[in-house]
Picture (cartoon, rainbow, N blue to C red):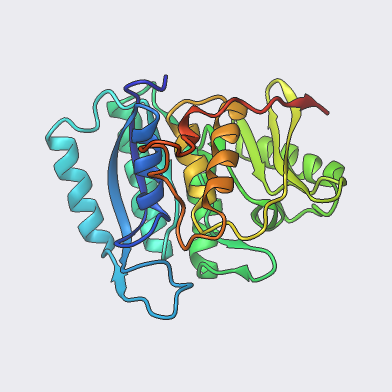
Length: 278
């Protein structure tokens, strides 16, 4: 799955920049997939800028959109469903209802839950009730969960300060929810100036290391979840993401369009990054 993969993603949307659906959809399309979108909230831009405006999509509106998509046959033959940012517990409830419906219409579809609830050092930026609903309603439905380091600790309630501790927390999370795999972003590697992914799945635990780059624009995690939902292997997705990050340093937004002109680096053609067993 990748070329022509059909993904339906539920997350935030911005008019300017690349976060949420505005990162997920173009990333999936860039690697040859197709992405239908359900916006949980619509904003002018990422709220980290000086000015931002917008509002959450009423959960009942989301439900009506889902019903219309189902009636049109758009939920048939999906390869993957991806859930991201939920502005309230009611949105997570609507997403959980959608996952149940999608599984009946597309039984083979993979469910990827990106628990977009917080990050270090700020902590939770989603309402606590929304984070709890993502943990209790969405995570148990997932085939793959992609928390960052902070989210892993919050979801598991376990220490994550070392790589061994993070691995144990991910293994506990996988067993608790019965999911096929957990991919931890910004994993706590002991080597200086090193970041990457910790993967815990049926095959065991693997580490994918990359150099730490400071100053990447918002949306990196959204791109990764989109590439994984499109069916890319972990090392392939990370190789593309790392090149995208390096291309985007110093810019206000991710350079998802890079590679279209002479001399530009095409992040979508980057080589995979190998993983190593732990």
